[in-house]
Image (tube, helix red, strand yellow):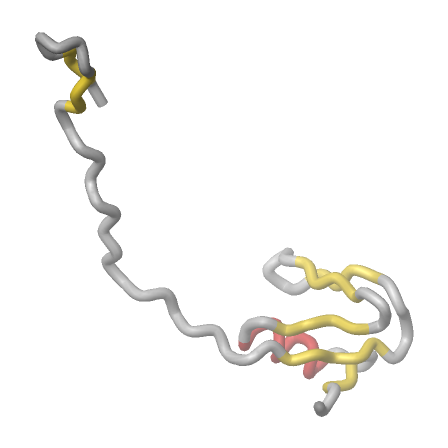
Length: 82
């Protein structure tokens, strides 16, 4: 962004910042689902894609379908119903 001085001494902006362009709307994320860890109160689970899910106070939250499927298949996890 360049600025120029006018005769009055004020600074003006030659170019404006471009507006951000949103090409696609983000994919909606389903509701967060909470699982209870029946074995540990604190640990880190490693998913097949090397992402991690922290277990805190015996609970872990699945924010996406892949996390939900991973936790649903895990023998130590139990889906909490609200």
